[in-house]
Length: 326
Image (cartoon, rainbow, N blue to C red; front, top):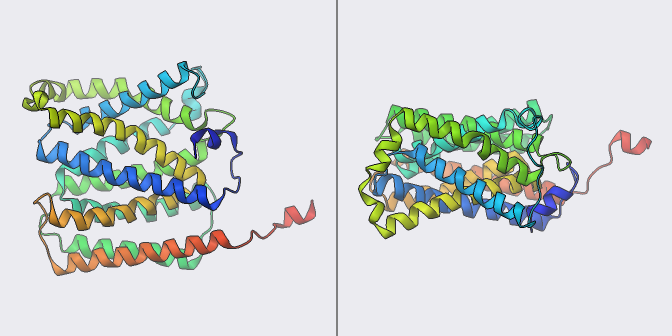
C-alpha cells in the first residue's frame, strides 16, 4: 500500500477492504507510538517547548518529502500563487493540531489525555455531516455517543484536574476533527494530492511557528536545555520528529481510504490502549473507580462502532436513482 495509489485514484472511489484495514492499522500504530515517545520527551526529560518539538516534526516532513521529490520517488506540484488558496485553512489547522496536541500531552496524565481526546469523534461526525454531506446510521451515532458518555464519566472523576491541560486537549480535539475533514475535502489527486497536502501544510507554517517560538522565549529555553548531550534523549527527540511525519502521512492515508470519522475512531481506540498502559507507567495517574468505568464504556463504544463499520463495508452498494437513470 502506498500514497501514490491514493494520488492516482479518483476521489470517492471504492477502496478494497484490505487497504482500508491496513491504512487504519498503520495510522493506529504510528499514533500509539508517537504519544508514548512524546510523553517521554516532554515529561520524563522535561523538554521545555512542545512548540519547538512541533517545529522539528514539520522540518522533518519538509525534508523527507522534498528529497523524495528531487529523487523522483514521489511527485507533487511545484509552488505557485494558487496553492495557498487551494489549501486554506489546512495549514492553520495543521499547526494548531500539532502544538495543542504536544502541549496537552505534557500537561496531562496519559489516561486523562486519552479519554479527553474522545471528543474529537462527535466533532468529526458533525463536521462530516455539515461539510461533506455524509449520513450515518443510528447505530453508529449511538456508538459514538457511548464513547462520549464514557469520556464524560472519566473526566468528571479526574482527581488530577488542570485547567491548562484540559483547555489544550479540547483545542486539540477541535483542530484534529477539522483537519481530518478538510484534508478529505482538499486532497484532490488532480491538484495537490497526498504528498502536496503534507508538504505545503508544513512548508507554510514552519517559519511562522519558529518566529512565534522565538518571540515567546521557547528557543532560548531549548538552547539551554541540559539533555542535548544525552544520547538516549537525542534518539527519542529525533524519533519523535520522524514519527511526526509518519503520523501525518498515515492520517492522510486513513482518511483517504476510509473516512475522517474512521480515522478519529481508530485514534480514539488506540488511545484506550494507551490509557491502560498509562495507569501503570508515567506515575501521574490517580486511579478512581468512576474513571475506570468511563474508560471501559469508551472501549465498548469503540468496539461497537468498529463492528458497524465492518458490516457496512461488507454490504453491496445500492445504486442511486441517478445511476439507475443513466
